[in-house]
Image 1 (cartoon, rainbow, N blue to C red):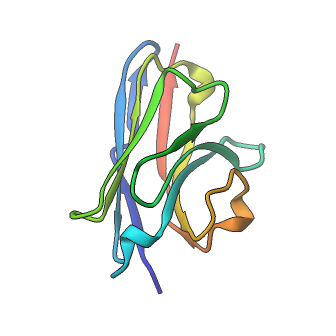
Image 2: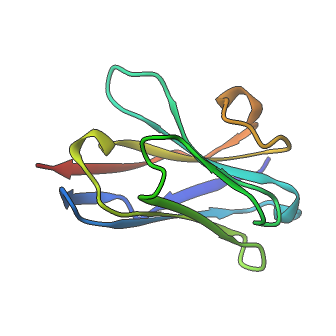
Length: 122
């Protein structure tokens, strides 16, 4: 069972930045496409972005395009989410997920972390 652990969440003012990290226990981490999702209270889990297994391709949800950047370090088995120009609508629990398909749908991802809370104050 692959374990994923997110860190880096916290409270930030609108306009600020945060960098989330996700550590993986997968032996073959380089085989997994890695995604970030988020879930706000009372809402469904929402796709944020995904990075391909070797990092050559990324895709983002429209509302974060240009503000958020996903990167990965396969040697360290880490994936990152750099979030800039945060606004209160970005407040949510953020999850990293790994899967064999590069998809925007949560059902395509078999491995999930426990999530890290991001709160953006106005």
